[in-house]
Image (tube, rainbow, N blue to C red; front, side):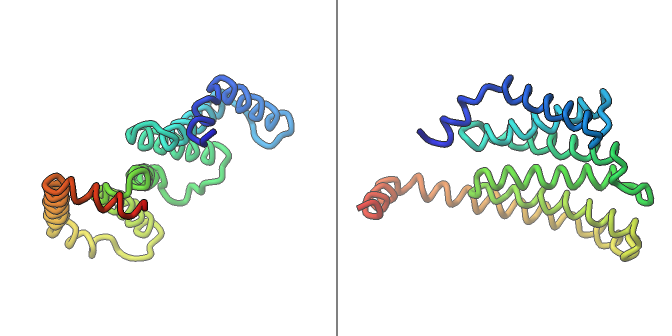
Length: 189
């Protein structure tokens, strides 16, 4: 039996009961202080992870994005409630940008032919990292702000070129379907 079929047969209620049991056990052992908020965030982490795993085992790409976003956002709030994130720097805004960047990255990993998803990945991850670098005073954001505000149309140009290249490749594949099938048959034999 394949991995995809095994994952689909796992009952969601069973996974939820295991997660609730683990959270309650961690609370009993003093590893974390279980509050309603932590419980909800733990459920969000679990639900997001379940969406990602089920999507990779035969679901759709949108579940990968939202599953990753829910997982990372829930994880962020759990770490914040456990005082594992410092309050010295504002971290919510860059965390949201990083979560969006990683969510697009997971969509790209789901189907690497959708390379155009790397553009929002780089964009959101880059903005999150720039905000963190500015707040930690690694460099002055205002000097980079000039280039970002003046040259952001370059992103549109790159994205447009990517769409044109992808459409031309798709058109070429559609024009030569017999050749592609013949090449695939030659590779198999």
